[in-house]
Amino acid sequence: MQISSAQIFAFVEGGLDRPFAERVLNLFVASPTKIRVVAIKETPGGTGGKPALLDHFRRLRRKGHLLATAWGKPFVSLFFLDKDADDALGKLIRSPHVAYTTNYDLESSLVSCGNLTQAVSDACHVTTAQAEGLLGNATELLHELSRNWADWITLCLISQYKKQNFGCTFDRISAININPLAPPDANELSIWKGKIRTQLGMTDGEFNKLYARFRRLVDTAAAEGHPLKYFKGKWLKHVLQRRVESQPRIPDASIGGLADRILSVLVSHVANSPNCQCCQHYSVFVNNAISMLQTRAAA
Image 1 (tube, rainbow, N blue to C red):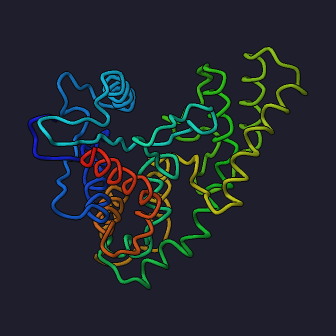
Image 2 (image 1 turned 30 degrees about the vertical axis):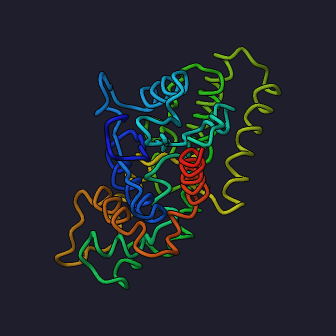
């Protein structure tokens, strides 16, 4: 970092995060300020994943390297993190060097802020009208998914809050939404709630109060226009694939492996215009980093 010509270092988990962070930074950072985006696995001993990214943040903070100067060159470190359920669990890091996604992760954030219909059109090699036929109204679809999976999301939040693995985790596709495009099976939901209540040693009243607390978070997020706030990207890829496959087949449409291609297309749309909706969330974050550099250089 000290010998590099870059002044803004952006640390990410990897995958889609790298091109996304680079595009966002290039939109707001003017020449001659140089940037470098680094996946955590690229750092010495980097193991990948969010825990490694957080460890690196804490290490730089401890050494005073989040904002520093070497041989007259000021440099700043930024961290682009998936929010996951950290806000619901009170685990968010409050730092001008850290930015979280608006939704659960980058994948769900891209789908929420990007043009999903256009991305399906490009990824499937079909027209926009045909893409609309496959998806329906994109906004309504995302709210429908949030409603259908709200109970599973609530169970996952309770599991994380209690720090116990009840079998319902964000790493697993919903076990109660037998049809991922439909509401949960009422009997399966009742079984899961009963099992978790028993493992927690709670009365019905105590568990219902806990359940209502986290269900309210999910419902409020959707009501405020953020239906994917707690909807994991892995789930989203699964249900989008199922949604498209459930519609009448379009000759010569490219359907297999659609979800990953949709996300790649959505990343390619980022920062293509000054009004990029996926970028606005990061404008204050990046501009603040630029101000820190300027203040440091003038000191």
